[in-house]
Image 1 (spheres, rainbow, N blue to C red):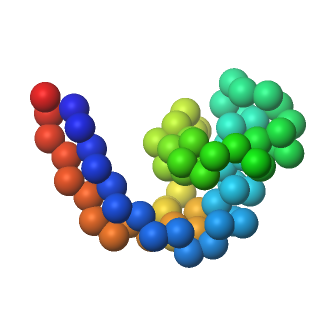
Image 2: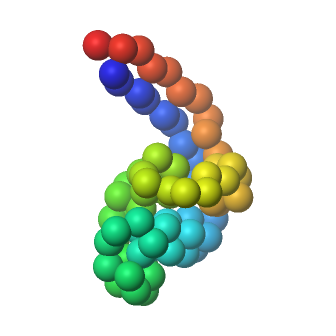
Length: 73
């Protein structure tokens, strides 16, 4: 399957904070501060799609999904 998402970052600090917290609670290093400087693409993936027990809306994460397309291979 392929999924392409066009995203606009509305609040990078909020995205980094939420994603680093999610990374620390989903099997990665348990200190959120460890992840704050990770590449933004890695943090975005973890915030939106990674192993999250409590998905929230993208706007709550500081991003807006502009468009998306997807299809199975």
